[in-house]
Length: 186
Length: 197
Image (cartoon, rainbow over all chains, first blue to last red; front, side, top):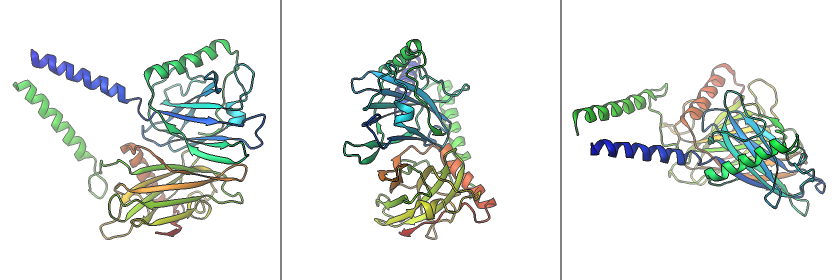
């Protein structure tokens, strides 16, 4: 009997650890600056799917202003080894929730599954699934364009829930505002 | 341990063994599962613009041996356009042109202007050197890569290639797709290795 209880506990621990590990390699953060209307050169975000999960993915994108207020969100399909290219000016900051365009802020990208229905237009749910990689070019104050790889961050369940809830608020109240677009490629 | 538990353990072990035994390549060698630190991803864009992007490869010496960089060039809609394998000696530096080495000989003859690059760090052949096509390779850690990217404005930026987990499915997909290019490409779809080693 003790062995049976111990086995059940071990299986439970394994399952819970597996669940905890599912959020590894699923969250990337980036920034943008000197976006419209000041930017003469546009920043670009590029997203690829490394194929780690062996399936198409949805890049759930959340755009924030510098005061942690969500401005736009959207979900974009990214095929195996595909390349998606998004313009900061056109795709990520041109349709802010409040109508006030942002010149700087942060971009958060969650790598999630691509289900039977594809990617939801607004990312308010989804199963985190590793594989997204991203790069962004940054327009510096001097006008110089620099580039870096998006940085990896651990994604907690609370943070994921918070992102989804904020985007859900956009869905409920935005009347079409606050929806970013997916650029080109797949 | 009672008989039921023993039976369960034996069944699990047999299942794992059978699964591992099933994972062999066409040359009969088992697939290596030491996939850590063997996979890099990058991208290219604006091929045909005045500036050219460069891909630089270095062997960090992790394996204390020469390595083969298995390179796969996909267009932006996940179609493999070119693949090849390039020798990178210990602490060596290899430099490839996106325009001339990675996109000049597409499988379909249609120039690819943007897409993704996958690099698998792999072992040299037992006879030395690298296979021409990376259709059968054995991952081995050590390759590092950087790439310059031509932006829409014409400016050139640079970033290190990103590390990713090489899953068995992605590995087999890349190998198999390159194998198709090898069989039906009639020389098309083979990238070249630039300069250095």
